[in-house]
Image 1 (cartoon, rainbow, N blue to C red):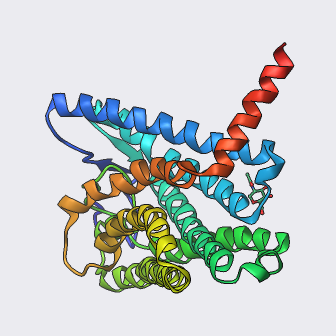
Image 2 (spheres, rainbow, N blue to C red):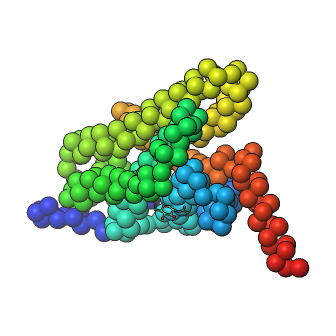
Image 3 (cartoon, helix red, strand yellow):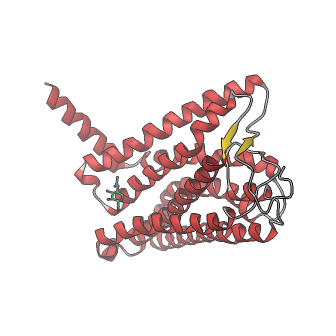
Length: 312
Ligand SMILES: *[C@@H]1O[C@H](CO)[C@@H](O)[C@H](O)[C@H]1NC(C)=O
């Protein structure tokens, strides 16, 4: 504890309580998360590789998908490996700098992911509802600008919260009841009244996540309504595809709502909820976007044929 010093930040590291359970559960979680993490890396990098290698996949949708995969890989790399290695260690510390860095990266990548999800929903909306204008609206220039806007939004979103939090005095408690660092949890440890800073985070992150969720649901409703007007047969097919997307979107946004928007303390639940965002939705994205997808299947076949003819 600081003794009468003027706003000195003496906390140099934080202690993460992590996912404390029995030893057996820890081993089980470690193996499961390791498997998920390998799946995230292989699945997403495979998409990136396929989209770059196959010229037939050089379309707006796959350009955005490959970039989403890159973000998913980075997003889970910031948290999952540390979570796995912490599972089996007794004393889980993270330095002040690492904690802030992790938090900022989570928000840069998280916000970039939100913008890309909106861009991809917009892409599908144009493809289905305005097919004649598709190539005009989703021009290469616009696709690149979607990605750039995503990263710029991420940096602005993260830095605008970081600027508040870095100036808070940290002098006392340094225990975080979670497996990673994030703004709401860091603010709780500041030795000052954090209420107005909590409001800044809730307003910023909460507005982003709630707004994105709302936009995505609206675009899905528009797509379904358009398909429904055309034919009832297509509707059931569209419902199958879209329900997978909606499931992932609901999975991704539920933890965010609990951490940033929900006004009541829920830390004991939401620390487990966020496993979904870091380890499960990044693994699901490559599956739902490629499974039962003809373009991808054909691209894989073309790729294996090319290998085959090269070897013989
Ligand atoms: C992602 O976006 C960037 C910038 O727009 C682009 O240069 C890059 O090729 C994209 N990545 C993939 C794998 O498509």
